[in-house]
Amino acid sequence: MGNVKIYLNFFVEYLQIEKNYSQYTIVNYVADIEDFMSFMKQQSLLHLEEITYNDTRLYLTELHKRKYSRKTISRKISALRSFFKFLMREGKLKENPFSLVSLPKKELKIPNFLYEEEIEKLFSISDCNTPLGQRNQALIEILYGTGMRVSECCQLKLSDVDFHIGTVLVNGKGGKQRYIPFGSFAQEALEQYIEEGRQKLTAKLLSGDEHQLIFVNNRGMPLTERGVRYILTGLIQKASATLHLHPHMFRHTFATHLLNEGADLRSVQELLGHSHLSSTQVYTHVTKEHLKKMYMSYHPRA
Image (cartoon, rainbow, N blue to C red):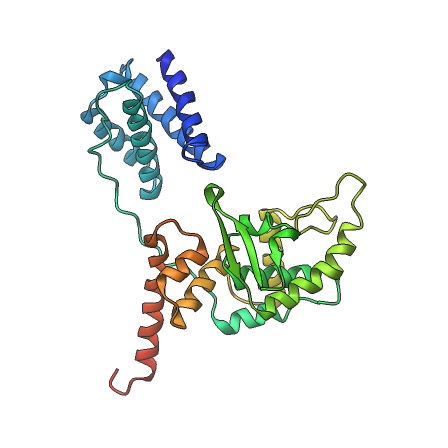
């Protein structure tokens, strides 16, 4: 099993350099492969060449026994299939024992989204006369106005925003960049925050701690994803809304509202930064539900 670690190191280099995968994805892939290697030892399989399709089926049974979700099992099998495919490409193996393993169908989860009146209530809470209120307003306006991921929002730099044409440059997954337009409400909130609130908050920074990231905490340091969750929880409490709001819900709402108003799926896919249209299509289920409710509420023969 000694050369497996060497192969794994080569595989990690391949994922980093050729596939440009994120560090988060690579860490998960390595953990999944190492889990399978531990299973191999339990089965007294000492060499990769000894692994057969039947062994992969045994491993699949083991994952089900551990009560992993279908999504987790799919990821593990996908990681192992990629690893063995890489070994075949490098001439280390002649066959991929995972090539015939079918991935379990994903559970279809319809994403939660906010109704327009809920969004409007959230937009009326922040005190835009204070630095933190200005930041909070700019944050929720930009999340809803662009549909970007929270991780992407936290990485936004001052140079990424072009107020003249109303677009923001977003660095997405796998190093992919995209431009997203934003509207007048987001622009007004963002301009006020950058010109006033952000300057007051970053004035607290010590020399050498200066940075160009747009969203900051109360000490002027870069705002984290955890910080965004904390802010949204506070806004919900102020709104007294019986709603469990998570940061990604703004992204879901952005996509759902666009489709409800007639936007085409390909355009929404590009705005969200989805590599595959199937990732965007989940939102069509939401809009179908919306149309059904409208029909049942207003059609005379419903």
